[in-house]
Every structure is written in C-alpha cells, then in structure tokens.
Length: 211
Image (tube, rainbow, N blue to C red; front, side, top):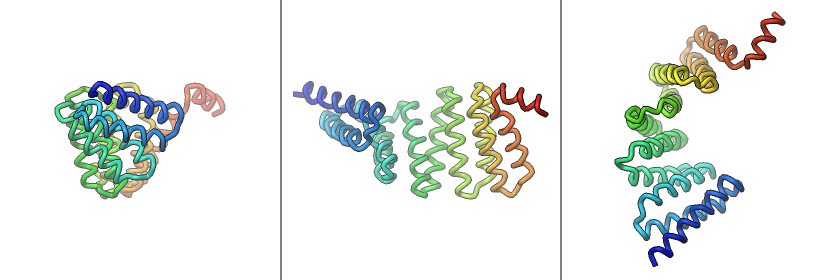
C-alpha cells in the first residue's frame, strides 16, 4: 500500500512538473502538486514533500497568492533544516515573498539568513543574487547605505565570476539606488557604466567608428 501511494505521488509530482514547465498550465500544475504533497504528508516522506512544496509555493506566488506562497516556503524551510543549500533556497524565496507582502523586516532577516548558508557553500552566483534581492528590501525600508553596500558586494562577485549580464543589471540597480538616495552624479556615473558595458562588442566597435 505504501509503495502504491508513493508511486502515485511521484507520478503526480512528475505530471505537475510537465504541466508547469513544458505546457505552461499553472492551475492544473498546482492541483497536481497539492495532491502529491497531501500524499507525501500521509507517507511522512519529508524529502519529497519539501521539493513539492517549493513547486506549490512558486505557483501560488505566480497566481498572485503571496500569503499561500509564504506558507508553502515556510513549511519547506522547516523540512530543509540541516541542509544548507535547500535552506538557502527556501529563505531566499521567503525574502522575496515577504517583500511582496510588505513584511520588510522579515524579508531582510530571511535574506541575511540565506546569505549565511550560501557563504559556507561557496556559491558566488547565488550569493550575488541574494545580495541584489536583499538590496531591494533595504531600499524599501529606506536603509539606503545597507542597500548600496549589498549592491556593491553583488557587483564585486559578478565581476569575479565573469557574469557580464548580471554586472550590467547591478550597475543599473546602483544607479537607481544612488538616485533614490539623492546622489544624482553617482547615479549618472553608474548609469553610464551600465550603458557602456551593456553594449555588445560589435555595437561598441560601430560606436567608436561612427564617433
């Protein structure tokens, strides 16, 4: 009986993934994920339940149900205790959802906690993403120095790993952050740098020739 229920839940989780990623049917995917989650709870299969809850929460957020998304990520976080990579993923997601809900202090706490896990994992790409996200929460709280500090750290990491697209994105965020903090000259400097680095090599050559 247990094996049969587990197989059914696995099939539902697989179906949900196909409906979500391949067929773009979020409503049907959510129903399949929730059915799989219910069965995994019955079986006390926390490993598979955690994975499914991430899918449930993501689809709830996509469906503009941030409260439901927060509940899903909170449960996933509890099940991920002791697994830093999974904890970091759940905490980052919670930071974004809490920000969407206006729970900004909780958003900051979750983002900082995600950073702590990631530092031990030596994943600079993920760390830079969390720093950029955390900067948004600090910005909404009006804590501009903290937001700028996060963005500068994110920029340094993006440069280190050669993430040119991410680097341009952070430069634009820095320009917006300096504009918001009342420093237009610095804002323009970062905006110009973002524009310069955002050009493809071919565009840069053509611009130089035309100049």
